[in-house]
Length: 352
Image (tube, rainbow, N blue to C red; front, side, top):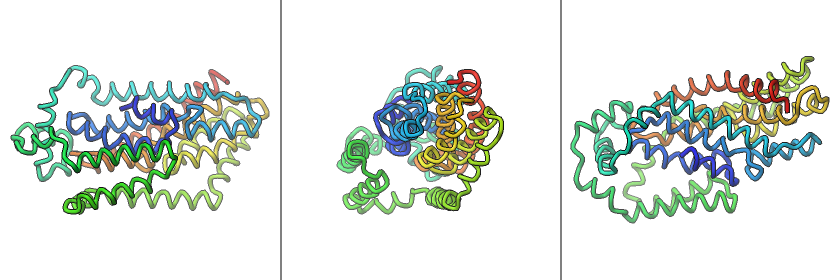
């Protein structure tokens, strides 16, 4: 899932679009095979960020365009590799820390066993409000319904139509560059028309609290940006007399703002703030741009960001409140630690 998300963003998909496509599949797979939803969510988001700065990606085009317009040295491949390597290292660390070793020790799992466990979990009336461990215990105790198990192996018309909708979503967003939100809603309406008897149940499963939370945060971020708060903070940091300290502070500004807002908007706003002292030559331009760009996107695992919210919304058979808190804590740790590590690696040691 990490690799698939990375490939999608590397060939041009915006990170939220790639996560919107992969997260439902990945988290459904995690529920079926008893993999931690938290771990799977981290793999999807960090995978999307890993490929996010290829020269033909949305992030890459934005950053490289700003660098080119400012007359700074170009480092398209260096930027791409910086994000790729940093997110791969994080992915490996998270895999080892949050259940990957147990998965390796478990070895292969038969699809029949996984189907039976998934059926047992879905048959539990409290599955949506339970933790992953509780869901696993109930799945072990309950006998799966035979008809439901047969339904997992036989592709129904509604399932085929859903798969067609996912393919259409990928093609329309990646090839024709249409808005992922509008396309997704349109496909959902079409699916609802063909499944009118069950569409109300699907609407009830939408995590409206998460939707309202993200809408509120995005509105607040837009207001803050419109009244000039971000520009004021960035200009204040850029005016610091010590270039290395200014570089570190700008990385933190990008990370903190991006944890609550669109990374695309943050990249377009923060990188130009670093241009004045980059032109002075006191800090390596390529290394600084790489550190700032990666710091502004690696925090997208926060549940306040679009990517993190998509993970929470698509989680199955887990307590979403618990998952939300875990992502919030993890996002806070990344926001504090990642800019410092990136600054040390790309600005202080490498220099660029």
